Length: 367
Image 1: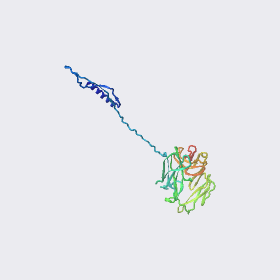
Image 2: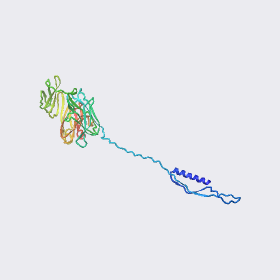
Image 3: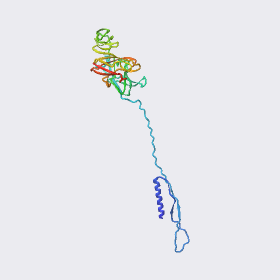
Image 4: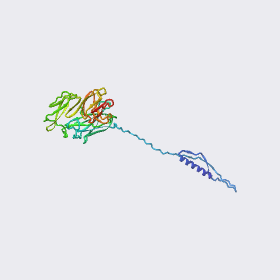
């Protein structure tokens, strides 16, 4: 009986081990001692006996362990195209009612709200232009474009009936700009208009007063009306007075040169400076100017490089971070006229071609 109990205990341990290990175990044959049956026989008086039988038992224990499986998740990531990358560039300016049509904003001339300003960008490797944005001027006449990548841009207004553009003065009426690391933003890209709408504009009438034009120059000047000419200086031109009336009995006259003028002269109490600048073979033919402070500059710009864009731009210093005037970019061969006011503070200033800012530069001296 003791041996049977031990065998059963061993079998239990083997089964438990198999369950824990998760494997299949086959036990070898073992012999169990069991009480055998009583066999009838001949008994001898005075003697009693028990006959034991021996049984052979083979036990096979099979344990199957099923391991838990962790599902595998498949994640698919889809990239969304980001489009044209934005940049740090910006272009801004304002629009005003140039009532006296003198190409600059004077005190009392109001802003113009609600005008559409369009921005176009030139293809990177081609001559075509594409509109990239448009906006309208706010109550202060201001507009701006931001987040612009590097490139060649042009900005212009959408004309309205009853108004005439006075600024910019170039033929196409556009500001041509290049955004780059060295020049990431442009400000004061303004637009001026005159007209009878909106309480502004110049009304042209027959003057009741006899205008007198006074011009200071060497040579011969002719004028319609009565004109007094004092001949000094070195400029030679033909002048045609334009008479406009701004009120009863009041006439003003502007002497507009009809040919290229060089040198310094005065007219109508204002000082003018005229000169010619030529861009040829990726270089300016002049590297310095000497201009009276506050003079109205009339610069005839000749781009003699066929198919190449150039311009004239004036800055406070060679760092070229603060523009004073930026002429529209023109592609040669072509001639255009830039008109702007020289700084009122005497000193040395810096000019360059914005398209070729390191090779086409010069000094602009204000006296």
